[in-house]
Length: 571
Image (cartoon, rainbow, N blue to C red; front, top):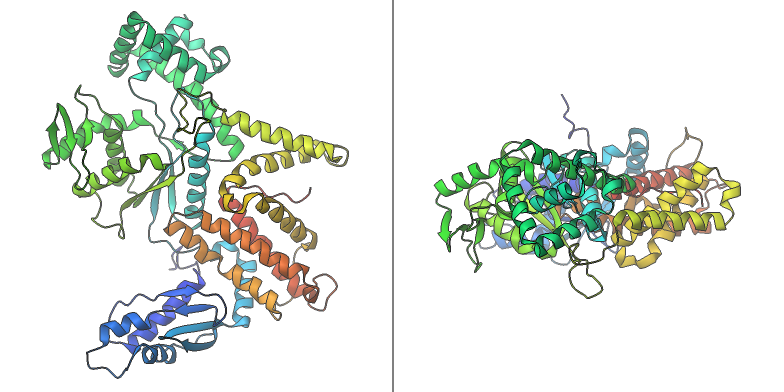
């Protein structure tokens, strides 16, 4: 019975690698488990290149061998390749590089088959079944601001790409919903609202202002500070009144977060600090029994080789911290959720923290020593968002721009621009609203994801989608795709490389690789479409070129979907 992975074709690079594996077994039968080094090349010598000859020569020289250098090894690899409809021609260049030119007929058939069976057939094959993507992760009672945007949209893209690759993704929103600050917030809530359970986001107003006001009161009033500290004890002790107040604050925050996630089209499942808190004592006890936890200056710590400060897992006052919570969360994800890959999205300022706690997990035997085998944990760091003072953006001491306000302003400006251009008279209100959302929200996301291209990316994407929409058939095209012109073949080759690009982006946790691919696809399509020799409508090759346009539209739409961008088809 075929498995889900068997039904996927995988990448062109992967299919070629299987052919080279067969060749290696004949060429160097005494060198088992040689991993094919296949890569796309610039087209001067071919479409793909196998670069194993030099490495194999270094292994077999000095032994009894028929070869006299890497070029001879390359020739043998080429000659021992099994016959395949994929390959039009092979050649050997330099020190044994085996160059492959793909068959135009096979390329055309593969693209046309995708149109019949769907883009999911081109999903890459990943080595894991279950992954956790930990992203966004705002703090309860604090507004989401522009600093949360990168974690949210990059994490969502990684989750989408892994899901497309048939990986079960647990999208985790590890919110900060537990800790000493809640005593301060609860006590302030009691002061402001006699019937606190009726306090809504409307009554409380700006969450960030509420947090700052409670913090100012905590710092300035010793009596309030004492009550707040006692409130923490009551909360952690499970007293009903304090638990209900805590739940009320969390619910108000969730409602605010939901407004942002709804606008961005992002789905997450919340499992915050409070969820993992009950697991901390057991995890610390287990690490202690293993001899990893030691006493240092009144705290309990894990020393990490090569780092001059320890990882504190229990503070000197007996309380837990980020490290203890993160270790408990990692333990839970590995043992309860059976995740094989745990991916964290934060700014680079937290790089050392993740490095230390990953190494602690390796010392405990939770993770293998290296980074090439599974299960494994990975940190995806992105640049810090800085305030006007050039320092790290922090909600507690900065007048922040609320993320929901930023998104609403982007939509508002887009809508105003559409109406200014007379679309209010031509389009329905629903079309105005949906286009304003797509352009406005998309502009915020696109600028962050396509920073290397500046503002050139968005107009190019819009032009391509409009061109594709203008030539889309009403469905049911009958005919055969032919890649006769060079521009047709270039476009077809780029379409076929979609699977390996997604695979590379997932494997290396670099969604910008998919951004680059989409931008290049737009340029290659524009070159094809604007070439008079490749005229689509009214030419002898109309059906074939319509099929190629349709395939381009399918791949572009999937790229947009994976990047969390809503395409528009009229402007």
